[in-house]
Length: 311
Image (cartoon, rainbow, N blue to C red):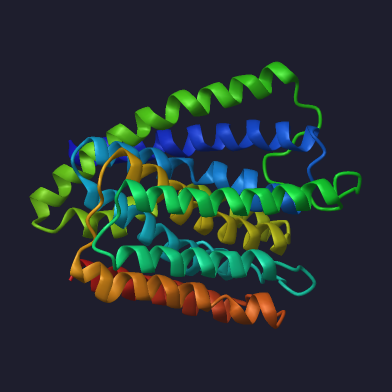
């Protein structure tokens, strides 16, 4: 029954998240925001909505370990799995697409979270710090969007439909807003029960089962980007989602309730998250393509990480 709850929650999260992204993307593009900015903000934030709802629900349900593990595990999965799996399908041509500024912001967000985590856990004041950093990043993205507002973009964005009517955009947004919290509640309820039955910590379940599940929207978006050979959307989605996971999701969740950070997470998982983020350097700064060989390596690293966590 618990696995059915998890499966139902994940299905609902995927469909509701997709509806939210489709509605938000079309609304943003109608406002004249260029595709790359949309991928770094609207698509990335929209596909992070499952993580946000799951983390908040976990705090309210008395399972803060799932909230923390969900974010840290999702960030690891975003780099190793969300880029690794599409690269097994086709090479992601990253050269010619400049995501250096966003990458530096992601690394800064990662280091900020780690510094706050080592203070003894996340509380309301650390949440305010994280949200303030998110606001600064949004202001920067807004200025970049305004600078390119009158320019035409040659890139497509997953979920974009120029002919989509206004009432359909509203319907997609409504479906996402209603479906996401319901799916999150089902997933958290099932995940807590599974952790208790397996005798593992809630954080371990959050780092693996929940993290993979809530990363499915990012994986779906990136697979489509790979098939359409839109490397900037794929890389931008991962970078933007990771920033929002750390600053937005943990920022909001910390305001809902305190999030203790265990010694295992401080000694291992946060460093794996940082190392995974730094693996993007060759693609972001050297213009290296994410080839099939890289895809195998990244996917294998995630499998090894998941095994280590559950062990």
